[in-house]
Image 1 (cartoon, helix red, strand yellow):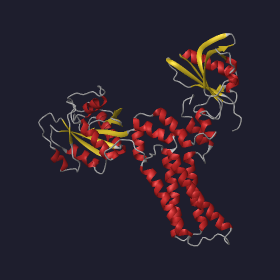
Image 2 (cartoon, rainbow, N blue to C red):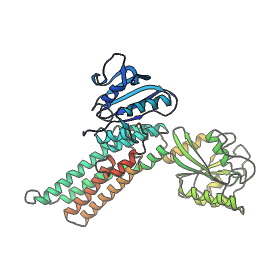
Image 3 (cartoon, rainbow, N blue to C red):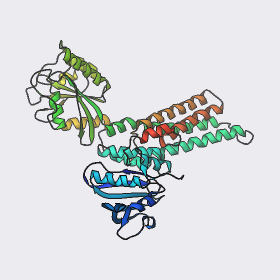
Image 4 (tube, rainbow, N blue to C red):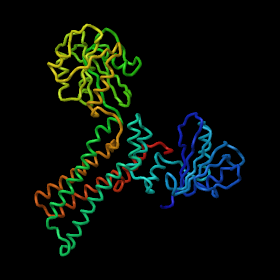
Length: 458
């Protein structure tokens, strides 16, 4: 590790709390802290053992700022692999700022966003995929997202990537050696052998890519649009799912004229719900804008929930909506099941091959069937976390796709009988794309962009 300057930041939220933490890391972390920490034991910070906790006071000269606990973690056995000190103080905003100002006064500089994790990456403690999982843990919105991020932090994704890269690198080295020394290393029959290896690793990449859509939805939420005719009960359904009156509900058709967006956790499934204006032909200019928006959101949604008023007859507007649902992930809710039905499930199924779920948004019945149908559509009936590694990062997905494309080119070159150096070029491209995921080959500006999304103290 090269010599580094010493950085400091507040690592806890800037709000009144029971405790606050100021984190310091770098070559001078211990000597800087020695100047401002007065231990009850009178011991100097530079003489303290690593991974020990000490009671004392933070002082600026003769001024006592706060009573604190001091945690010492000497490199390389620390998060950054540098000498690290954490000051556990009282959790007031002013006192935390005052302690940080004192640390900076005695020689540290303010940390940039994500700089502690960036140093952990640069010092080889974690790779880039693991570093990115840190911010995912912080932003986790449900149990799946948390467990998936923890699995990535432990290196499960990186292990699989490294396994594939190791095999590709072996083949690259073999080809290059054979081309340099054809008298001693033969490539006779090698193309068929290489094709098997490439197909095996391509299948491993495909397996990772197959998890990316579910991984994204379980991490970020399923983009869900509620559609239907005016007064079908869309807003009532939204209010029921959210658990509060978010949408105006009246008996007047066309009350919802713009979109309402809410995020709900349905027993571990995050739904990013958009309640749209009722879809119908209208001469009202404002309502028509809302209807056009509804159709646009419908095109981009992961899931469409179509609410049908079972107490009224189907009409041309319903038929238009059902046409839009074909070959989409859609659920049809036959609402107002507490009233005498006019439209039946059989009638709907004569127009579209989706079995409606009877519900009553008003009585809050049938919603457990909606949850089960979402599980069936997206997660094979389950949302339980297993040992499978999920790809939840769009950057990782893009690099995997590029690596797969390069391996496809290798297979094509083999089938076309191209010279072996063609194999080597595309194998190297795949190797480098996979390296982007774990940070083996990455541009500085991309690394800076990734770490800039972190908070100051992480």
